[in-house]
Amino acid sequence: MPLKIYNTLTKQKDEFQPLDPPNVKMYVCGITPYDETHLGHARAYVTFDVIRRYLEELGYRVEYVQNITDVDDKLIKKSQESGETVESIAAHFTDSYKSVMKKLNILDPTQYVKATDHIQEMVKWVKRLIDKGFAYEIEGDVYYSVEKFREYGKLSKRKIEDMVSGARVAVDERKKNPLDFALWKTAKEGEPAWGSPWGKGRPGWHIECSVMSTKYLGEQFDIHGGGLDLVFPHHENEIAQTEAVTGRSPWVKYWVHNGFVNVNKQKMSKSLGNFFTLKDIFKQFEPMAVRLFILQTHYRGPIDFSDQELEKSNTAYGNLCNFVDNVNSILEIGSKDIPRVRAHFDDEVKGKLENFEKRFRKEMDDDFNTAAALAVVFKVISFFYSSLKEKQIDLVDVKKIKEMVSGFSAILGINVRETKLDDESKRLVLDLDRARSNKDFATADQTRLALEKMGYKVKNTKAGTVLTRAAAWLPKL
Image: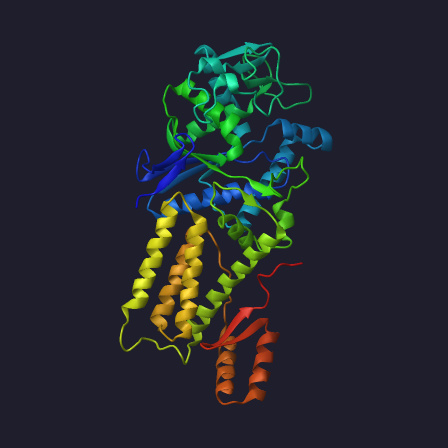
């Protein structure tokens, strides 16, 4: 089946047909770096990392741009409270964010773009909106007139008369309409400011993404992403600005939004006191377990956060790592119960693997259904263990199964931790298996102890001895 993506603009799953195949251009709203990266950020950027990875798996060349809003009301407030400069705060938390993204195995975008590097281009855009009659200036502030854009509300499916003013700004009585939003703000004393035809000031929140996305991706592109909370007002306002300037519609073909992270049925937020930074979470849980936790829910649905659910994901990640260690032990050391090649080739394993491949692709083609795709991964692992128990596979099959699980994991961005065996470890495993076979239990116990002192967890299976790194993936409680 062809890839289908749920499009917020059309409110349905649309077949994915990029504007200029095989090229795909994608823009995702990035962070405002005024505080530590939290689980809500991880939800968004893991989602779009998987989308990018799967599109590349399908053969597309993805150009992925993500912005950094390094001038904003929250940054200015943080600067005033701490005494640090806006620049130093933004630089610190941007570096922290990128470090956390690497731990989650999130690929860098093609480009990170900073708002402060594009101020004069934003000034030009604001001037064009005024010249076209879509904006007006009052005492150094410039506002977008939403009533001038006939399609305002087409993304959020709201009517102007039913709307309320945007969340990030207080209502200004000077505005022609309460919904009119700031394109340019007059600077207050001590705030960052740049020159403009309307005096010193700084850009509004929404104009930044319009300017930077079109600069790097063109006047029309394929995918614009972000959290569900950005549909209105941010993305609605971006459409109004951009289509007014360029005269081209639709500006973006596919609008993709991820759901919220909830705690006790409420959206995670600082104001409710249910806020969790990734740095704190990583003190207890393996980052790949956090990634797995996120992928176990479809990206458009809400995720209910709890330590118990993360512990389940941590266990699942441990099971995945143990599977890889089991397979590696069999492939590297061999097993008396598994032939290199079966005398009579059985098409059953081949057919099963082909079916798993089709099911995985089917789920990913259905609006990137990672939850169902992950279920396929663990079905492959279960098939491996049941086939091992029944002695229905050979080493060729084992290698194919490992390659399949590794391939699926790579598409999902799950970096599986493997236990690498050196020559001494392999020799001791062979000695241990030989001692057990000869019922030389004293030598077996001595050899097991030697392996444990080397940091291995030793497990006796029907396929032979399997080594894993002791508790490498368990919570550090």
